[in-house]
Image (tube, rainbow, N blue to C red; front, side):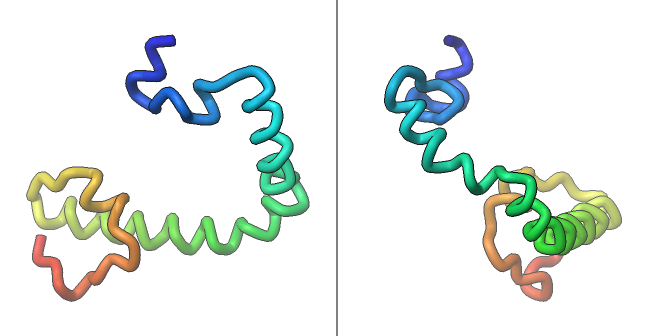
Amino acid sequence: MALKTVIGKSSLVAIGGEFWKKLRKVFNPAFAPSHLDTQVPAILEESMVFIDRLKEVAASGKTVPMAQLTMVPDYPRSSHSW
């Protein structure tokens, strides 16, 4: 699978067999509709924060690596000058 070079050979998407079945059983409850419904407010809040970050970068006219916007937890808005 060529995808393994991108996502890694131990990704849940790339593995199979009994190990996959075991992991899927562990993760299934997290994807139940009743649980996902409880996550919607947090997903929306984080999405709005991300949209604000994108607007700031767009307004600056600068090029910024996406990793800089997506991989930084608790992004300190005031310390960055785009």
